Length: 156
Image (cartoon, rainbow, N blue to C red; front, side):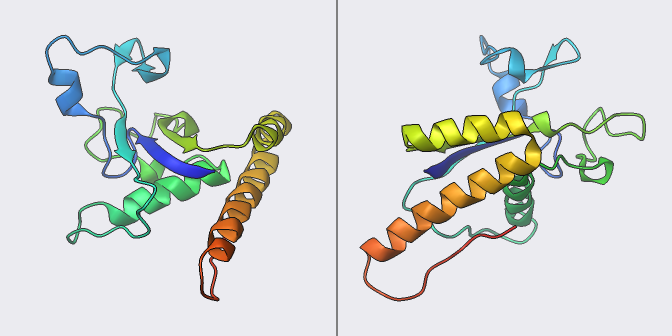
């Protein structure tokens, strides 16, 4: 299993994809991109399976991207202070929702997918634990298939 895409909207420096929305004939990918009866496309950040680092200039959103991944993996939605300041919805009245952060996983084994679905049904804590366990298994396989000693383990 690997993280292939992060979808973020109204989160810190990721407001929504203004360019995609302004493109002639552009359409929502589904109802999940709608908010308050209007289309606000997610900012999509795709990850190449060969990438192991994130590099960018100061204030380019590296920490915001990693924070978005962490909050989406943990199942803990973002708080009011995490809303994009430039969002038309940034106010004390708007409820923050975890639906504004989504992850797309690739190479998920069928047995692991069943475990993740059951964990999601059990609640956020079960989902987060199952996802972290699955990622650690993938890291274990990757690190043992390559030469060398150190390995990375994700913990909650």
